[in-house]
Length: 85
Image (tube, rainbow, N blue to C red; front, side, top):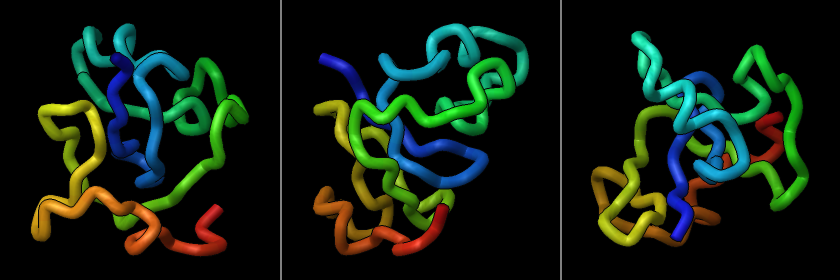
C-alpha cells in the first residue's frame, strides 16, 4: 500500500510512490516534498490530479490516507483550495 502525505512546501496531496519521499525523508532535513516542490523533479507526475490543501492541517493516518488533524475527516474535497496552483 502506498501512503499519501501533505507536501510541507505547497500543501498538496502526494503519494509516496510518485516522488522522492523515501529518499528525501532519509536525508538530514527530512522534509516531505511533492514532485513539484522537490528541486530534483520540479514537475507534477500527472498520475492523479494535484489537490492543494491548507498547509499543515493534514496527517497520514494508520491506513495511509490523509486525515484532517482537527476533525479526523478524510473527505479531502471539502478542504481543497480551488485554483491553488
